[in-house]
Amino acid sequence: MKLRRRTFLKGSGLAALFSAIPRSWAEALGYPRALQGPMIGSPGPNHFTVWVRASGAFEVKLEYSTDRDFKTVLQGSSAIANAGDDCCVTLRAEGLQPDTPYWYRLKYAGEGDRYQFLPHRTRTAPAGAADFRVAFGSCCRIQYDPDQRIWNAVRALEPDMFLWLGDNVYADSDQRAALVDLYGRGRVVERLEPLLRSTPQLATWDDHDFGYNNSDGRSPFKDESLQVFRNFWANPASGEADNPGVYFKQHYGGVDFFVLDGRYHRDPIDKTDDAGKTMLGARQKAWLKRELKASRTPFKVLAIGGGWSCAENEKGGDSWGVYLSERTELFDFVRDNDIGGVVCISGDSHMGELNCIPRSGEGGYDIYDFCSSPLAQMPAAKNTRQAPEVRVRDTWTRSVNVGLMRFDMTGAKPTLTYTLHDVMGEAVWEPLVLTPDDLKNGIRTWDSKSDPDELERLQRFKRGGGYYGQDVPDGWPSRPYYDGKPD
Image (cartoon, rainbow, N blue to C red):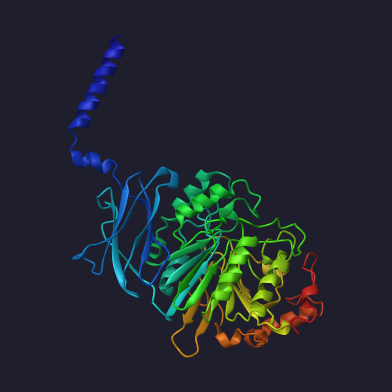
């Protein structure tokens, strides 16, 4: 009885103590705020988009201004965060001027965030043809590299948009909690946060953020994985109303970007590679063909996780190298419908690559694939056992890296310049410059654009030698696709 009485008195004492704490102290122990973010999402000339993950189920409101001091406060949209969406919300400011800087801040249940006192700044997209930069990368494993110095280089390159090309987190799990935890941890990397808060971020996924390694459309977890992906990214769209997925089109500065989903509808990699095997699925492929045919931009960028070349045509490969029938179907469609300006970007390989798929000998034009990987993961030297159709530049395996596409659409002859940058920001190759005239049916460019050393290595490989001057080891890909192509 005495023990119970002492416990009661002790509890009463604590209650009295807490009741004496000033109200402001109590509120500081827990209040509405951002857990992660904000992050800028899909851009437009008359709007900007803001993603944030709130600390609870309450209203989040966007405010913005043309001046840093918010002398004039303009109201954006608001939304109620809820647990079903992992408390993630996406907000928009509408009716804005093109190519104009705006300051923004968020209110949580009517209050400012006590951890983020200063407003953030972003910029609307240009209304027409522009001179702009798009950076991209893949394979960002926080378990391997929590510091991620590569973002110092990315910020210094001053991109106008950043594209995440898959393996954006390494959950490798069928548990929702694992995906949510890894996305959350990835959004608070100190060097990355300034980029997230100022520069539009768009994304697709690959196997490690879709499910397990090399996972495909059979995954029983894919719908929940898709829901988490949609919660944590602010893309302009996510598949179609009647066809799930993460694919979408984004226009920026006079260029159309087609960001594709290579996982949700994918057939198994070991299925026979014929007309019945698909990476994209019938509905997404029909959407892509329709949108490409309707596009009128000088450049059209196809973005996906796995590489477009046949380099990974080997046991265990899961890129387009083992879906060549469908790839041929797409490139034949581009040729047969006289669709100019198609170029490709990709990730996944843990190497920087600049490859070419020669199509000029088949009535089309040569299609370039620029791969940036990894952002924060161990680089690999798989190039010693792989050979694409054409290596335009030697592979980069010495450090993490980021790809940069520089578009100048303002002159009489638009240009696209590819560069790859290492962890210090240095360009590791001579730039590849393309114009719309290079990307028209019947135009051959692959040999004139490639490094002479790479052409010499290719010829040695075609003669039966090793690509890098050694005998061909067991396990190298077979050569049927080299017979006469390229000549």
